[in-house]
Amino acid sequence: MVERMKVIEELVHRVIGPDGDAYNPAEHLISLSDLEGEVGVGVGGDLMNAEADGLHIEDLNRPLVVEPVEGEVEDAAEGPAQAQCGSQAGGKLCPGGLCCSRFGFCGSTDPWCGDGCQSNCKPGPSPTPPTTPSPTPPTTPGTGGDISSLISQATFNDMLKHRGDSNCRGSFYTYDSFLAAARSFNGFGNTGDANTRKREIAAFFGQTSHETTGGWPTAPDGPNAWGYCFIEERGNPGDYCRASAEWPCAPGKKYYGRGPIQISWNYNYGQAGRAIGVDLINNPDLVASDPVISFKTALWFWMTPQSPKPSCHDVITGRWTPSDADRQAGRVPGYGVITNIINGGIECGKGPNPQVQDRIGYYQRYCGLLGVSTGDNLDCFNQRSFAP
Figure (cartoon, helix red, strand yellow):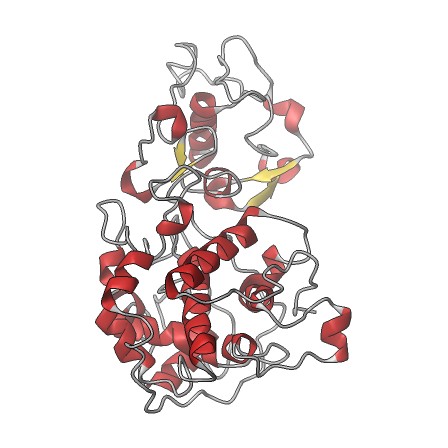
C-alpha cells in the first residue's frame, strides 16, 4: 500500500491535462474506483491490473486526477504543479539523471522516459525473449586493423560532443578504448572499400548512440549530438536473469543493460565474456567499469550473428543476402535491418515512431561527419521482427 500511495502522491502533483497544463486536484477529482479494469503502468514501470492491484493509470496524457488521500498528500489543493524541466522550465535538466517528460516533469518510468521525453531519455525496454536463444558459435576476437585513419580523435569528439557534460557520464567512453576494442575484432571497420568502412563506423555509433542517448528534441546542437551520455540502464532495472544450464546467473548479480549496446540478459553476458576472454557472468559490472571491455561487448554483439538474425556487420557491409522469408517480412539490406536486429520486437513493424527516427538521425549525422552516404532502407517501419 505504501508503494501505491507513492504513485498517488506523484500523480497528484504531476497530472497533466490535454493541453499540457497541470490540473488542480481540488477541482478535478476522479475516484480510483472509476479506474477499475483498466491497464496502466505500475510502480517500477510494470503493467498492472486494477482488479488485482486496486490502482490503474492508463497513461499520464489524459485528463486524470487521482483523489487525494487525507494524511498522505497534505498539499494536494495548493494549486497547479509547476514544471520542473525541459522547454516548460527554460531547458532545465532533471537531477540525478531522471527523465524529463513531454510536459516538463521528472521521473524514471516509461510515462516520463518514453514517447515525447525531452531529456535524459532511456532507451525502450528490450523484449523478453520467449525462449533462451540457441548457442551461437563464438566470435573469436583477433588482430583487427588500425581504423584511426577512418575516424580521428577530433571526429570522435565531434560525434559525441556532449558525452563529457556534467549531466552525462560518457567521458567513460574514450577514443583510445574504442580503438583498442576495435583492434580485437577482425573485419570491423576493415571490410570493403573506404566508404563501406566509414559507413560501418557511422552505423555502429548511430545505433549505440541511441542506446545511450541523453538528447531531447530541443537539446543544444540538436538531439543527435548527445550520444554516449550514459553507461548503465537507468531507472530501477531488474536482474535480467533467465534460466540457463550453460549460463546460470551468479548469486546477487544483475544482467541489465550496460555499455554502448546496453547488453542485457545473462546468456548474452556469458557468450560475450567467452568471446572476449572475461568472466562476465560473475563480473557483469566490468562492462560499466572498464571502457575497453564495454566497447568489446558492443562489438561482439555487432559482429556475431544469432540465428535467424544476421550480424549487424554483415548487413552494413553488404555481405548479407535476405532469404525469401526475409523479403516477405520486408527485411531488405540497409540500416533499418540493424535496428530490427537490435530491438525489432519493440520498434519495428509499427509504422513511424520516434525511437527508430532517433536511430536514423544519429546515423545520418555521423555519415555526414565521416563524408559518406547513408545508403537506402534506413527504417524498419514496415518490417516484421525477426522474433517468431
